[in-house]
Amino acid sequence: MRSIPMPALPTATASSCMVWLPGAYHAAQDFVTAGFAQAVRARQISLDLIFIDMELEHVGDRSALQKLQSDVVSPARAASHPDEVDGLCLLAPYLGSRILTNEITHAPGLAAWQPGELAEADEQRRVWRYIKNRHAGSPPLYLGFGREDRFSAAHELLAATLPADSVDVISGGHEWPTWSSLWGNFLDSRFI
Image (cartoon, rainbow, N blue to C red; front, side):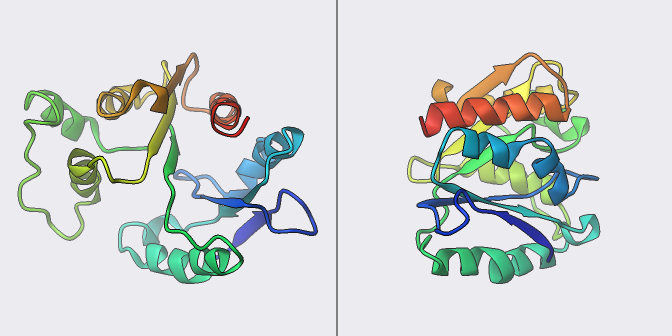
């Protein structure tokens, strides 16, 4: 699994580490180009970043998750990031098809929706089952998205399940300038 590590400081391990997975048809280098590491350094935050290249065909078969665990997460924990996942920062995630989000909306809503029996390959329903079953002890989840994002209907469904201070909605679409602004907002609200 190819990764681009971007340490906060070249000679030391930061107190926190974030692993970033790219969206479909994106690569680890896109995070660097969009200035994600530069935003951390400009704010002088003790936060190491690791940007991952993930083959799209391996996401659904879960082999990518096993490789991510063994090649990236375990070594990062061993380098003084020993805790389990402290939380998730989702910037405009793909949460499933419009057919599925319409099904959830017409249930009415996530609380009433039943995912039914899940086929092994039904990752979209697994994601929403996870969201539905999150509880107070679950790792915190932060969601950022643009109002004009083509997936905003699904984002709004997820946002309705989160505390208000865990959601950031700004003007913008499903594009890097919007995600970069959301990233800056996340850093400012969580680290400064």
